[in-house]
Amino acid sequence: RAKKSLDEKICYYEANMDEASRARRAMARDLWVALEQGQFFLNFQIQRAVSSDEITGYEVLLRWQHPTQGLIPPATFIPVAEECGAISAIGDWVLEHACREAVLWNLQPRIAVNLSALQLSNAGLVEKVRAVLAATGLPAHRLELEVTETALIADRDRALHLLQQLKAMGVTIAMDDFGSGYSSLETLRSFPFDKIKLDRSFINELETSQQAKAFVRAILALGHSLNVAVLAEGVETEAQRAILEEEGCQEGQGYLFGYPALLSRLGELDQAVPPHEVQRRA
Ligand code: C2E
Ligand code: MG
Ligand code: MG
Ligand code: MG
Image 1 (tube, rainbow, N blue to C red):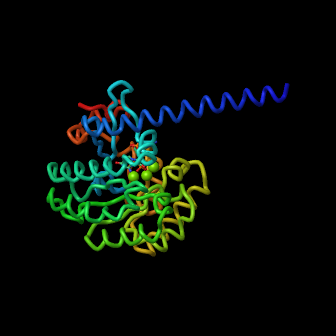
Image 2: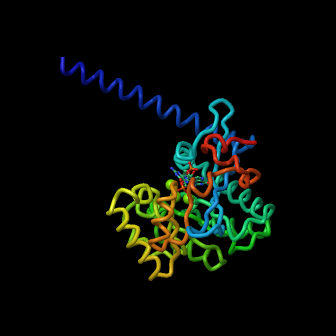
Image 3: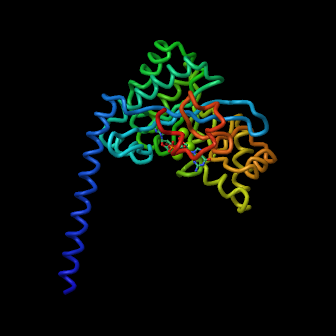
């Protein structure tokens, strides 16, 4: 009896595993089609000073309008794109289009583009960035690249070498989601970051947790003494903004300051509707 139920469990598990991997395979195939058929588009989200209206940058966020499944969030498709290798081509597409739009709309002072682990392990990255900047005419100092700690794990030496070359070109480097991964301090010590993006989970708890506040304070002090800028992610309320200002945090990003949106709609008042509404292609 027990044996039978174990068998059943295994069967069930395998059937589900199959279904999951079938779904991933289908999505991998769809990703290549998406690239060919222009189903990707970009949203931009304002980054700004915590204590004034000054804009400090625009983060570029990839969107996929699937023909039958609708808008698929990057958290769902980026891991699949990493797994099947499509992220290299998709990442190139993002970089080119983001830089082109930054020139077209004269986005100042900079745009911030997310890099995936696979892009960071590809030696062609530096040449790609150089070529895109040359082709679009975007000055290197107006491009920031965001990397996560997890993206640096695979091949740390190569990643370090690539980031150093990019920095030498004038591109700035931000550590994304700081505090959500592991070995943060070690990574901070060995990589030449210009900016730390404090993970949203700290900001979330800022009003309720003394511990979260203590962490934010400590990271701000660290950033200050290392001469590394600190940006708070996921600022949603005025109370959070006020605490950040009080603690001396200079930059923020979040729904309080603006939802991710098409550039053509970024300045509109009606962008104050939930992200899934504004993200849709115009
Ligand atoms: P991320 O780089 O940390 O981007 C910030 C995410 O937080 C975005 O989610 C943004 O919409 C969301 N966000 C911004 N403000 C708030 C807020 O106040 N509250 C909350 N709850 N969320 C906020 P999104 O656009 O769904 O992207 C998720 C992740 O997907 C990104 O996290 C990034 O890791 C990845 N991603 C997005 N675009 C690209 C891309 O072009 N290339 C790569 N490799 N990854 C990308
Ligand atoms: Mg990011
Ligand atoms: Mg982030
Ligand atoms: Mg993230």
